[in-house]
Image 1: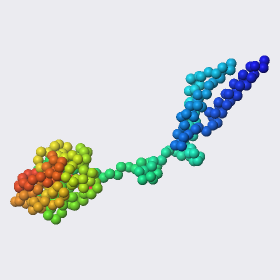
Image 2 (image 1 turned 135 degrees about the vertical axis):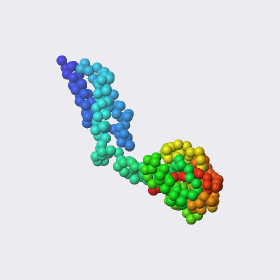
Image 3 (image 1 turned 30 degrees about the horizontal axis):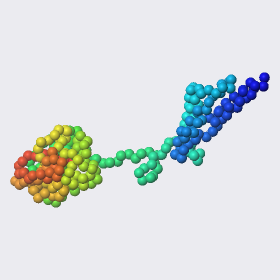
Length: 262
């Protein structure tokens, strides 16, 4: 009569110990705070003991204990090693500063297109060029304010449009240049070539601007005369000829580059 009580006593002791290990212990973690896989496995792989004293390896028991350990780990995840309550892991910026969320993309973008209509070099000055760009943008429902890429004898197109660090892209969203310096380094990422409606143009455009952004000497008398000649660019080109190609007579009908203003 003394044998069975000893078996039952051992069973109770082992079961009680197992319950203590799962419920009462601190879930192991490595230095990063992650549950240590090897230690967690050793906890949930403990053998269950049947009432006759034999050791069994029950899949259901292991699964139940695994779930128990997972629940404990998840419940304690919001507590740091110092015991401080935390809601979520913070985001660390590239400079090492800790923030609650990632910063929004603040990159400024200016759209560019070539006009679907063509004009002589007598535009009525640069203001006439700006007006034509605004008309074409409005006709295509592009929104925004637009100005023509035209240089005069007193001001370059880049200075007039105050190009700086903004990204320039086509109407279809393709990047042309990352900033003004990139625009004038002699190589565009893609040729401009699309008009305000997204169609490819086949003609050249008035610019009065050299590849490096400097003033061209020919500009149809600051875009007020048909009696002279003016420098133009080729929208299908991605090298410096995009703005500095040939010098036709001002009676020639060409398009304009239009760039979204700030």
